Length: 468
Image (cartoon, rainbow, N blue to C red; front, top):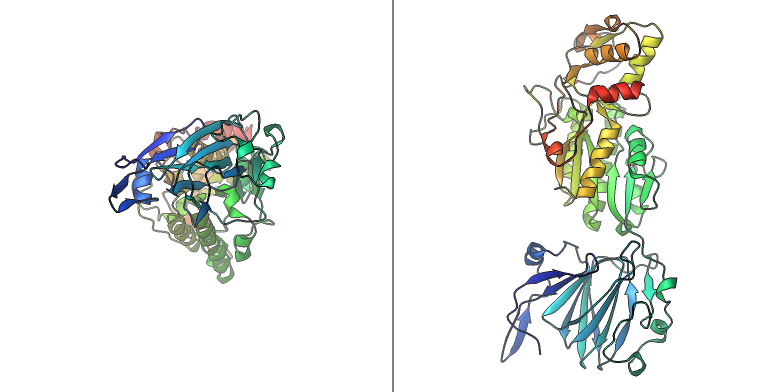
């Protein structure tokens, strides 16, 4: 008999992510009614927002019908419309809980959320049992499946009706024992722009585990819309977009403007659609150039964007698109320094070559070492911090470009007085081509990222280590 009048409650099981739900069922002399999937209420109760795309029903004529242990690369919401089942679930995912077993009975008043990679099977306890399940992906011949024998001695499932007395398919009887099962790997993290300054830092932060995939421009070019067909996106949990068009002055030319919009907006919009459609977390790296630099004080994540030039406009537009993705992190940075050509390396080279530079002294900000960006991204993902915008730069008192150049000269054993200050207007007065406007104030507040538990490095300490 179906139990009426339960409250909606969610209970954890020994298998991580496998959640049992008690469902309210309302009945009278005519029959009963229940909300089999009610997103708003069930999310509030603790179920994940898994985004089902298909609803399947398996009807079973006789009691004792037994279905094999199958682990698919998608999530399932399993319930019973009529009848009753004994369900058995085995964790077939890579990791320390591989092989863990959980069993329970399901009737119309109890359902279960089965995460990707957990083997699912059942045995009907009543005739005319209708077993229903919602899934968040469509069947694919290219997907990675895993199977376990129903009679596996290690799992030792206590089937209520002996397997010798029930209806089972020959295929299910032939599945491997646990020792021979191929575990389902975790969903992957894809880093786009993996060959740039930040991309290389992300490689160092994440490592070479198969869980992480790195794509340079040759593998994924955001300016080429065909990249959306390059992957089976349901196999990814996270995309980190470290790619961008960053030639701020060239962006002011007709050709540069087109390229900047193609990579920073059109390509990012395609990424956002992919992430939204497949429930992927999208991490997107932005810039202080989304601001006009006129604020008195540090910019917070809540300040309105007011970009001055084409590059800043494309970054602001990209941010607005990424903000529509349900699971997103927008990382705002300034004055990025990593492996490769950058301001610090240029100043060190000038110092060594005996060149005394004039450096802009009316723009103020902080350097952001790529190790800080990569560390912040890793921290936010690992801690599952609230989605949204986070400012990330290295920490310390803000300085002008000229003051930073003097620090570089001093750290490399040269006289810092060889660096002279000059206004932005004077510096670019003799420029041969277009010059993008720069924000005079690029200082970003770090209160939110530090409150999230990540402490950026000291800018000057990191500078000394970088030069050393």
